[in-house]
Amino acid sequence: MRNNIVHPGADELVYEIREIVEVANKIAKVGVPIVWENIGDPVAKGEKVPQWMKDIVSKMTKKDDSCYGYSPTKGLLATREYIAHERNIEDGTQITPDDILFFNGLGDAISTVYNYLNKNVRVIGPNPAYSTHSSAEASHAGASHITYRLDPDNNWYPDMADLRAKILKHPEISGVLIVNPDNPTGMVYSQEMIKQVVDIAREFDLFVISDEIYSNLFYGGVVHKKLASVIDSVPGIAMRGISKEFPWPGARCGWLEFYNRDKDKAFARYAKTIIDAKMLEVWATTLPQKVLPLVMSNKKYYPYLAKRTAKYQEKSEIAFEMFSKVRELKVNKAYGAFYMTVLFRDGVLKKGQTLKIKNKKAEEIIKPLVGTDKLDKRFVYYLLASRGICVVPLSSGFNSDLYGFRITLLEPDLKKFKKTVGEIIEAVREYVMSV
Image (cartoon, rainbow, N blue to C red; front, side, top):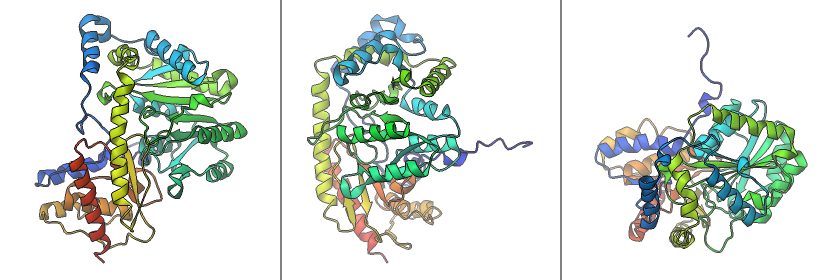
């Protein structure tokens, strides 16, 4: 080409969660049945959308032709009014419908938030990271994502000292991201921890982003609090959506909530840029916005969520009990979302470790892939080819310096879930003993 047309952040766009699907599909074609533990789609994993929720959607499509049309740029006013009202009651905030902006899924929102940030500033995020955030932020900056540590020896809680040290080291940091409940660890921030992040943001004149896509999926005795409950006068953005809660990932329906735009001129202009950018697009999907207040205000909604989360808690406890008996592994219970992260202890993984693969065609598929210097990724490929279990490596999948993997808590069949965990444990033991 006459000029270099490649974006400087192109190499930062990595999404291992779906990239490993390509490898798994090739292995499936040569006769290895796949157990999909790589992606958080409750519907694909077999969860049933309740009939009462389907009835609300069905009735809307039959009675209201406007659900087939465009919505206003910011989203339907009635839906934004409902969200603002609920937030003000629940968290004591003073947001208005104009502080809420709908997108075609939260992935669209995440991309826009980083894409329209000044190229010279950064947003620091957790390690392990959720790759949609880490890749989008790194691509925007054309440099590796800056992270603060989540401590596996302290229930995956954020290391506030590390967060502070990184902010001091990198004056280009202007925002702090939390994912609450966290993906991939299943950790839930307490209100006090969120307040500590907000206090640090206030001290260093930063804004806070809180990804709350799993905000009503918590269990095990913890209480989830949203950023709105402690944001006070600090500028902030909360990210919400229905894809995991309803569950309706195919709806592509997420939104941003802006806090304290009136407190900082630069933040207000940045928020306006995001809104202006949305003006250039075809607007967010209408049908899910139409039914959102009807579903969330239905008396069956929260009991439905309670039944779902009780099942996640049960599987979290089962997986914790099983994995914690393996001395080569380190694991914490999940208390939110539907994921669990399992770590290899230091020094357990070594080059040259293998698993026996009965299907020779599957072995040929992974042969060019297992030379990676990411030792957990090597294990994941061997697990895929030998057992047909598709998990996500922590290092490359979640921008982490730790070795491990993420599983989901979505399998509705407890017997099958226990079998999958048991097979992973067998594979770990065989793998570490292979050299």
